[in-house]
Image 1 (cartoon, rainbow, N blue to C red):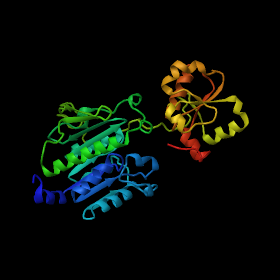
Image 2 (cartoon, rainbow, N blue to C red):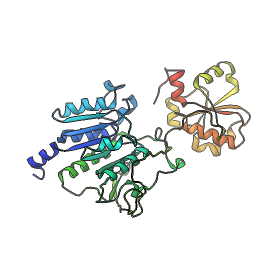
Image 3 (cartoon, rainbow, N blue to C red):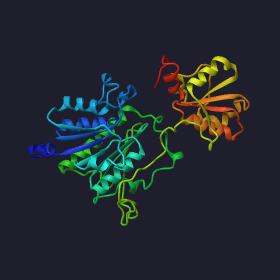
Image 4 (cartoon, one colour):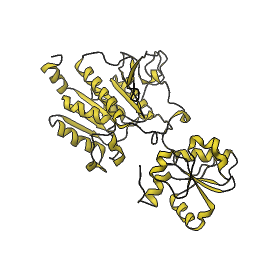
Length: 364
């Protein structure tokens, strides 16, 4: 009765854009469709990968290789064929975010990186759009509602992007699949409350969820007068690109850092002729190593390298690798600074090796 026919018609006349058709966007979009929200926008530039399926439940095995937007539209049509689903097969950027969100009542930030979060936040503040925020990492999640003129924004909580060294690697951090469902469903709940004008939205509050402890905590948030975008004297008056170095570094030769790199094809050729002269150093975690690894390698996780580098011969020819190349790049930098003269980084890591050399190896 708190919703009734009038509320259902209100939802039918409403619109929500979900930015990201991944772990958070999947449950959020599905429940919005099931609730009868009349127009739903889906923004994503990626395609469905097998590794997505443990958390991105809007997609199925048959959708692997399909654009996530198209896969999402098919699933939402199965749930509710009476709604309109609009697709944006593009990456959110400063030159398109405002036009994408302009015609929607609510924005759901279901992105998975800091750069996009800041773009969404700034566009929502400048465009006066409620921003339903969610984020997940490993076993913990966060959710809040940033509503212009009614409470703080994302920059009030995090005024500027974190420095690169403080950011966990986005591709390698990992997440418990069901955690995405919990936070994404909370985001859908908050969006429906805003559309219906009922309850107490998470405006001025940050909900924190610890899945391991099964505990919810709520922190009060306040608008910051010095906030660069919603403060009393904002310095950000238009949406600008935000660069955050949390992705795996592009693996090329970096003269400034002294890192020399080798491609999987080059390494494979060297191993065929000089296998006994090369030490393969795996700097991943043991659980990753157990899935796949190069034959006769030495396993020393990156976090253990400072204490265990004595196990390596400083004069040996060493090739370091990880999953995609980021951690091994840092390992090479560290070892170079500690007297190792002949060490290289494997471009693209073990995934690059699998793609270019040995497709029979299991991937993750």
